[in-house]
Length: 137
Image (cartoon, rainbow, N blue to C red; front, side, top):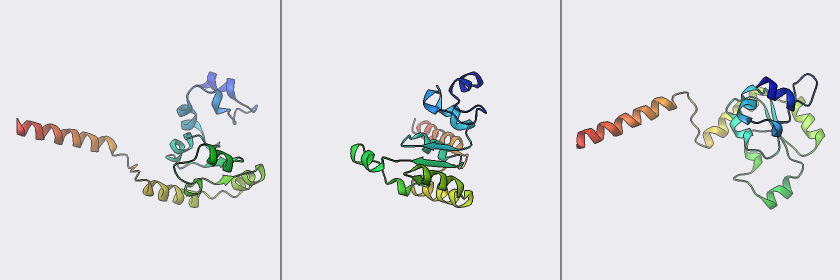
């Protein structure tokens, strides 16, 4: 990861990365402390970390008319900025506690269950299906 990361860093301290030049977005999301994006769905993968995610969408109306959304961006927990100034304001005034609550509410509304027990549930389901088939013969 380090060699690939050095090739796509924007700043000298290697803290800002141009993500579209990196081969594996999941590696970047795992390493990132913050994500700023426009309409990339990667922000929803990053959402599960509950680390700060920001939307910078200067062309929101045009994008919405051209492509549309599954739901309004205002329904997401991400602070939305239409200008550089709004983005700076959102970053400077970010409140992790409020953001975490918004993330939790958003995930509940979407039916997401992230309790670390998914594998256990899948195994239990498979065992019950196998047991049922064995009983039926």
